Length: 269
Image (cartoon, rainbow, N blue to C red):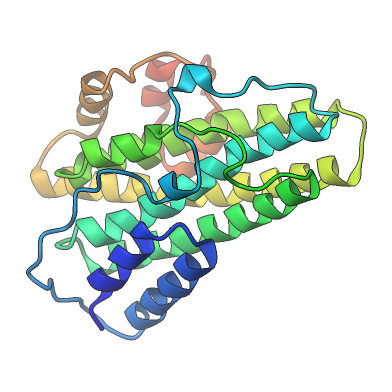
């Protein structure tokens, strides 16, 4: 099996069921072999994300404003935005395997496992979204995560720093706040399902960030460079070094050190 041809099909289809089926083929194959040979082909630098076939892409400022979460439209907008992050995360995980071919087999298995989780997360959210009367693609989206994946395509170290250690870790900061807002909304089955889905995603995203943390440190060790200095240098390069409200407990579980969390805005650790 040429996993890279199959991953290319995964990364270029918008059909979530086909994407899942193809990803499962790669996962099953990679569970039975100890190594994967590079097929000698260059990985593609994609000009557009797979979801561009079904979603209208707009600048972040033109995204629909959050409305009353007690209404189907308001909840639908929220669910759509989170589902879009999860959909984007599927392709980000698959792309890590497709693109960084000289990384160890365990790296490939880790990110295939993440992709499988993200597919499940997306389908879970999309099911609730349908209950509100909407489908994925009914609201505009932005392509920020796809754009950063192409900006970091030449360096796995930058990808591990920016995607799991920055963007996914930021999700750990934000997720509990969204749940708290939903808990203040008059309860109905869709609200309760959304809170449960967010809780599942939150717990599993800690593992995803931990995988990114592990491989970031692995690459730093390989290159003989300081982990903390390198991480903050990369954040500066991409203009992402901004102090924020940090979820210290979740980030510690994912592998962050107290010192760097304080540098990022944590009040205590």
